[in-house]
Image 1 (cartoon, rainbow, N blue to C red):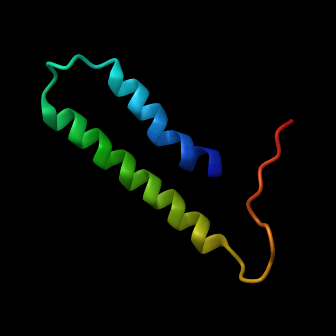
Image 2 (spheres, rainbow, N blue to C red; image 1 turned 45 degrees about the horizontal axis):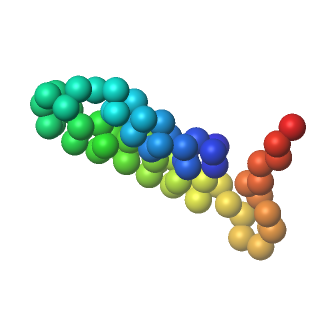
Image 3 (cartoon, rainbow, N blue to C red; image 1 turned 135 degrees about the vertical axis):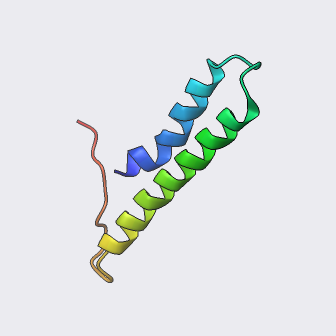
Length: 63
């Protein structure tokens, strides 16, 4: 989940680079608002799942 929180905005930014500059401005604004809301929801979900004093809880290991 941590990787999703970090890389979701980057993935959307890369996708928006493919959209022509002549696209309506609300498309870009709406995309960023939607990504921000999703990212905030993911951060809140991680934060609510933390147990105080339990050490490292959300670590990711590469294979």
